Length: 278
Figure 1: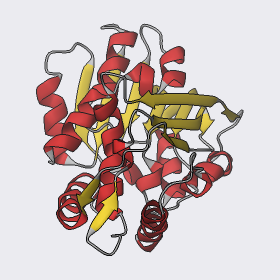
Figure 2: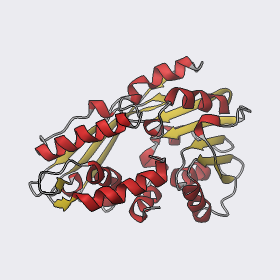
Figure 3: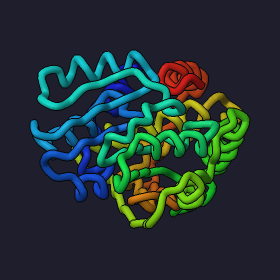
Figure 4: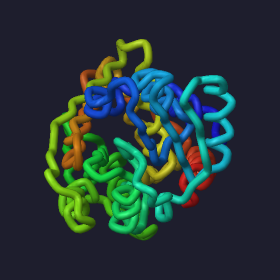
């Protein structure tokens, strides 16, 4: 697994990445974290429900599960398994089934939603946090190279069968599989270059930009993680059901870093292939 991407996944926290879930946790709950990656958020869930609770993290990527097991070995009530999101166990034993930034990488989010619902107990809760890439806004106006990158990125996703606006349809997806009382909550995340963990938090976006960016004619691409003293602001709709928006702000400085795109494309394609099978 790409080391930089692994470090970024490991740096995620429950409070920062899935605050709506964090607010609902209490000791003794049984929670399934689907698409858990290296288990950083899952460990936070386990800490919140305590040893009297039970937490299972699942991911289709065996390398990520191996990393999760190694990092969180010995945590009471916490286990990790390799599992396919489309065919989760349907014994309805979990109080909460959670998935963060997962459906955006799946070609059949409807089938995945049915699988998530099938893992929750009667009266349980399904929480999904995700993005709508089609409704992104940029402030200030980015360079043409960044606009070309983003158009190429959305086309690449569409060509892979991925839904760029899946968050817009999460409520409908939930209702279609029989989930009721679907609610939507706003979530605001701000990242600034002055923050100590800015590079870690922004690197997935920056690396994806570098990997899919459209060259400017000289084999270079604009790197949004290198904007002067500015930052990135992400606004999503997150909650017991749906995320609707992603809004990214990159600005506050004039310095831009030009990088060689070719090697970045190779490196990130490998990382995306390892993590998502793309």
